[in-house]
Length: 292
Image (tube, rainbow, N blue to C red; front, top):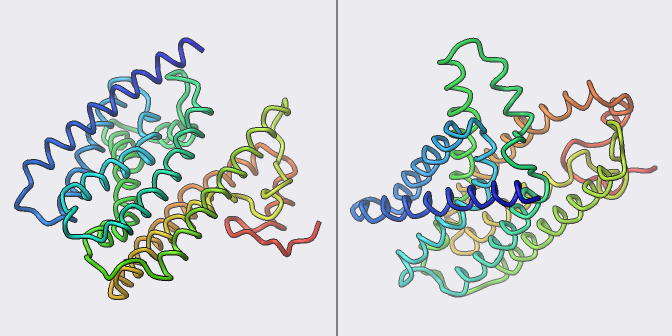
């Protein structure tokens, strides 16, 4: 436990330094557009964390990036344009974003064992490389940069909504808030069910109860639903932001193609009962009409 706390403290110090670095970079970009500032700082933070992952020989440095950096970026945006956007909507969006980020960060902290542990997907991807250039392209490109770009695109609806003056809250804001809360609750329940299941097994088995009976990855359904809720906030500000749905589509593609496909392939190799479960259960969307 002491080792894990020490390693978490190092991660915390690294991310604090990363956020300060982002703030400094932001201060140098006064002549840039808001979306350009966010993109540049997002990529700069990715490079910062990538360097730490190389120094510690562990790409799981990036795991916390997913939940920590979006919050830092949106707060920087809000402080930069506080007089322009709708304050009530900004508070509401940040409350939802923080709820989501706290859940995701907590779940990562609970499952991460320290620097002795690295996400098996990272290990597998890097293990397939044949030379240093391929290793760099996989480590920096596939593990760090591509997910950053996907999160940036999915975060754009919130950035645009923060900057738009609007006419106060409306029904769509209520819908967006409800979707965000439901999304995070689904993730919390899914996380806890899987955590309890893994504590009580000694060999690979397939989780087929609770929300996992209705979906192979209900936590990912919650993730996609959350990002969609940010899009709804954007069109609540202005229906002209409908084109930002592309961010949700990109996030869905990242989860469905990169994460779900990779995890299911591994489960087929490790769990004898997974093929039958896979054939009867949707990969992401929750099918409450499924019969036992």
